[in-house]
Image (cartoon, rainbow, N blue to C red; front, side):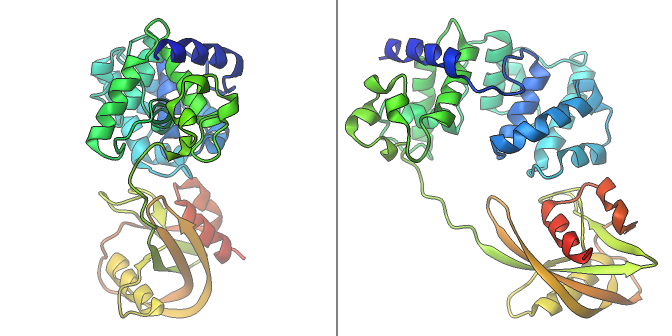
Length: 350
């Protein structure tokens, strides 16, 4: 069955591959950046942001020389900011240990911050022809359907089965093209819903297609519905400047700047949460003057409703838990700001 997969797949890929800004490159840095960006971010977003990032940081050493705040700003809006921190740490390590280059082997790549099995396999196979199957969600879906894998791919038994099959059908002569081909097939043809089976180059040998219901695969755990959380935040201005607080270490969005405030607790009004959170974060006692509006923002695992209040300082007798900064509203764009905060600022600026 492997032979009925490899050649038709590569033939299809060489005629139908996606035209991507990083496609065709053998530059390990460019491949690494693209793969890190594609984690948890849509291709549509990447097509706009990847060229800008590479222009700013064309080499490993250029990112290694940047400050963390500069790196966070360059990543702004892409989410999962731990990725850019890991990417910068990898750049620092490569400049120190590998003369400003990424190591070639999978076994060395996987030891670097933020580089997992898939990314290490993608870089080593595309750039150095190493015989390693790169397995992401697209690849898992294609293989699950082609072989009608009955194991749950959300569990270790299913992961092991997919890995075994992926390496079994890997084209050892062109592992890089093969890995990119199967990713493209999953993205363009073998889609999660309404797969284009009649356009698929390997459908004749696909067990899922021949079963009459390819969408049965992959078998995996159902996603839980994302919880919705109310968050109270405030616009506090003095002398024409607005107060921002920095996200603390070890939290989501670490290092970014946002409006002060936080999650509304049980048996607490939104206004009460605003007063309490700002006291904890800044040490300030505030007076909530009026509600300015509300915006919604969704993360992968969480949905938030940001309730925006205008507030003024009553007293400031002690330090809070956050680092503070006063900045001109029009100069905020120089700082790394989360998307949710940007939405709130659009209300405040009206």
